Amino acid sequence: KDQGSSSSSRTRGCNCKKSSCLKKYCECFQASVYCSFSVCKCLDCKNIEGNEEREALTAKMRKNSTEQMMQSLSGGSGGLIASSADMFLPPSTFAVP
Image 1 (tube, rainbow, N blue to C red):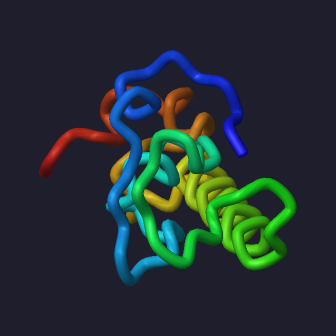
Image 2 (tube, rainbow, N blue to C red):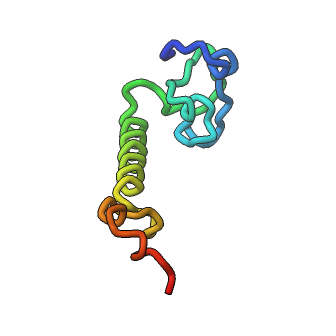
Image 3 (cartoon, one colour):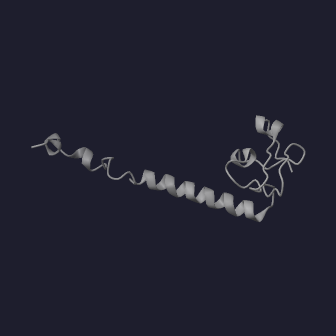
């Protein structure tokens, strides 16, 4: 089932043998497109529309990506970024004795 993309991976397709096209090294999966049976030469493909295993995996990846982004925005940088309250302290507060 083709999702209809004009990228170079759509003209070449993937050649996955053991990953069922559910790993990042699958060109189609990495590009977030379904495999095309007319272009791809993969075996035991699960990167197709409606496949529950693929949907669960991509949902988990989206959740992890969102959590990482939220953590970095909320100051998960190990204290390297000053908080907004620190920006209002007088300069002498930052001076080294």
